[in-house]
Amino acid sequence: MVTVGWEGGKVRFLDQTLLPHEERSVLTDDYRVLGEAIRSLRIRGAPVIGVAAAFGCALALSDSRLGTPAEGRAALSAAISYLSGTRPTAVNLFGALERIRRVASGSEHVTLEDLRRTVLREALAIQEEDRASCRVLGRLGASLIEKGSSVLTHCNTGALATAGEGTALSAIVEAHRLGKLVRVFVDETRPLLQGARLTAWELKKDQIPVTLVTDSMVGHVMKAGAIDCVVVGTDRTAANGDVANKIGTYTVAVLAHRHGIPFYVAAPTSSIDLGCPRGDKIPIEERDSREVTHIFDRQIAPSGIKIANPAFDVTPHDLVTAIITERGIARPPYWRSLPRVVKGELAKTEAPKPETRSRLKNGRRAKAGRPSR
Image (cartoon, rainbow, N blue to C red; front, side, top):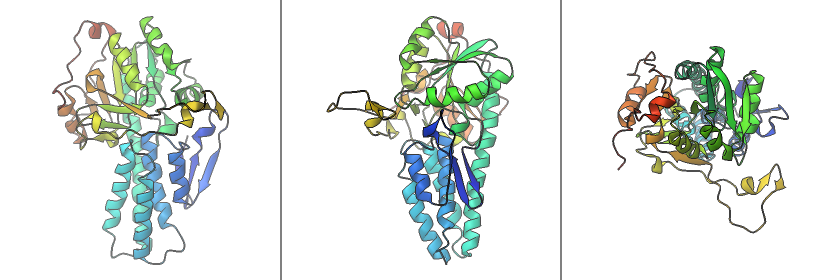
């Protein structure tokens, strides 16, 4: 599945708002169309947002009305400014745009065609790096899932959200390939139902046994002993290991902690923000209230009431059992292990044994480390 791709000087993307009922792709040569698709969640998922933004920069330079390198740099600057305003929480967006800005800044004295080639080459590199990251994340994440496990995941972290097989969902798919999984529980992920619409759809396509539950059922199924571990993704991970992910993730983490269930976060290093000291410094996107009051254009709430619609919440680092990256698996204390991961100092073969429910219940889970200031 190619969620976003470069095709003959244009960008083709799958419109995720139409799933699971319709698979329709859109072909565009306008970075503004791509930016609006990111804003409206037609393109969603932190890694693939970064890829799409990079391709948007390449589209800005493909405008046939541009004639000089100076005009190209001005068009690129306008595109970066526009795209950076589409979604505030996922750090991949800003990381990709900064990479494009950096490679373009060294092109002041080359031709417009050289500038175009440089930016497109970097965008394609961002896409390929994410594909490679997904492959390793899947392998390392699967190593933490015990044979015979039932796994819960939240929101969508699969091929729809990345350039590859996914982050958390890549680990789940790989565990299934290895014969480790009994089934996957997916919660619906209100208000936009990414779990019900997207993750359940991906798992069904992969012929992986999936059970859909409402968000409010998670505590019940955990208490019943049906969940062996939780694997989720992240849109931004702070330096102390606090994790910003789709709204509802914090609730799942609290419930997992209460029931002694390992809570793993799959985080490509592109989503780790060492410049952000802790979770309360992560900007949380507030989205349109209509997403809460309506389901598929049908109003379900009374008119005239106040609505809150934060798109993300922050899970504190002391609720996170391990953070899986393509450069190794980070364990508490995260303020120490995450910089090592980003620098590539943890070997990819350092895959610790999986935590078990009994170990966590017996209190042998490692402490999260230095308190936040």
